[in-house]
Image (tube, rainbow, N blue to C red; front, top):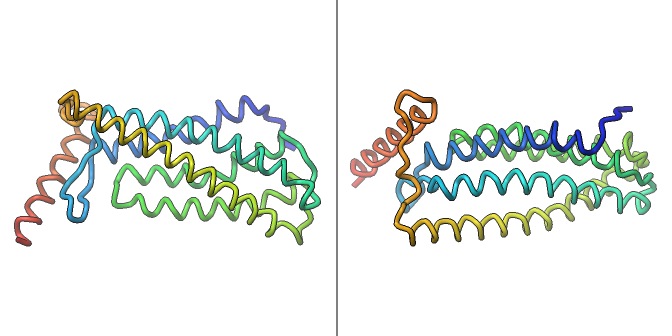
Length: 213
C-alpha cells in the first residue's frame, strides 16, 4: 500500500544507501588499503577511488531501474500483474541488504561478508514478488530465479564497465606521475586518522612479510 513515488524512492532511499556503501568502499580501498597475496600492501589511488565511488552510486541506480524493468517485463510470464511502481519497490528493497552490508567494506578484510547481504537480498526478492506483483506463490521461485539470472548478466556488464574505469583511472594517474594515494589529510581530521590507520596497517604488513622471509 506504500505510495512513495519512483523519483522519491530513488533520491530519498536508493542514492543515500548506495552512497554510504560506496563511501565505505572508498575509505577501505583508498585510505586504509589491504594486503594482497603476492602483491604486498595496496591502496587504490585517491582519484581512482573517487571515480569508482561515483560510478558505484550510478551503477546502483541503473541496476535498480533495469531490475524493475526485468521484473515488470516478466510478470505476465509468471501470472503476475505488470506495474512499474510496484516492480520498482521490489527492486529497490531487494537491493537493500547488499547496500547495508556494503558498509563492511570500510574494513577491507570484512568486505567478503557483504556477500551475505546480497544473498539475503535474493530472499527478499522472493518474498516481495507475490504481494507486490501479485505473482502466484507456486511460481515465485521460478520468477525469482529468472530475474536473478537476468540481473547476473546486467551486473556482469556493469562490473566490466567499472573495471575499465578503474584501469583507465590508474593508468592516467600513473601517466601524470601523481600516484593518487599521496594526498595527505589533516592528521587530526577523521579522514586523516583513517589514513594513519591505513599507513599503520601497511607498516604492519611489511613487518610480517619481512618476518616471514
